[in-house]
Length: 398
Image 1: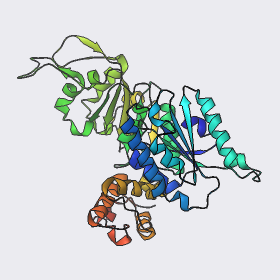
Image 2 (image 1 turned 90 degrees about the vertical axis):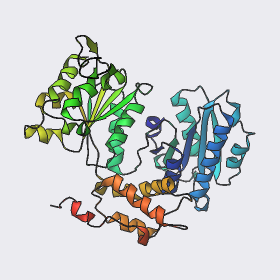
Image 3 (image 1 turned 135 degrees about the vertical axis):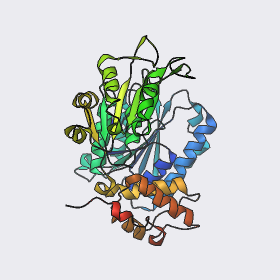
Image 4 (image 1 turned 30 degrees about the horizontal axis):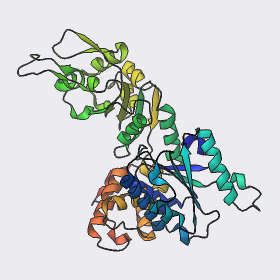
């Protein structure tokens, strides 16, 4: 649906209810598309109530809007919990600035897109000669989507890469500074792929001692060493799923050939075993150090580099996507506060001029501290505090 709608609209995706609330406040969308898969009446009623609250919290009704907010609810035809007589649905329909449509499945995506386009164009001012060119923000809500948040040009380019690589079988290398969200990107590659129902197994190469790498990766057989018991390794756990190797640039020179052999042959042996096992997994690697630079310095094997980097995704640092800071900050507010604080313009200005050496992880900590200190009202500039001396970690500007 995101791909189909992006031909006519700018699309934002919310991965959960908190993110939905943040996106609604930031974007003031013209269209809200909600997909329900649960047959639990109480569960669906709760979600509709949260959607209703998010719309009111975003103060969309206070805007002079043309067209009004078009809400599309997509569900299976046998799901009676969301029939028009439902009280939560009636609450949405009663909003004067809301037009609610229910679309019942099964329908092809092209047909759903056509219904949405037609309904939205009917709400546009008929005197607008270029109404087909109007760019509306579309917020898609689905619980299986990625929790990555942003709207900047660099962010959208990154999301486009992730979606296009998701169903490929070849290895992906994710490069980005610490705190930029490399593991979230890896999770998105998995959750948007055909392997999403299978395991996502993560290993941090920087945290595994060289002597334990083969045991963690390949598993062990009983008696392989003193007190050794039989257990499977990461490769076996990730069978038919995704293996995520974080900080692969920290992998020791002694461990690199072992990984290379698995990638070349598709086979491995448990520690202490003479029997080979086949490995069917999709490899996703990440590093804050560019393995290309490491290979140029003879700190990373060239042949391993070419095995792990069929596709490369570069995660931009937060200082290069500052348009995303208000959206991220409001998201973290809803995550850390009991009363869902908003953020004053002065506080957002203070966040915007910071260099963010710790990237999104640092922003998360800053908002967490602000929420802990605030007892009521909006977060102001005085509530925003950075770690003493953190500016010394900022990258040098050329």
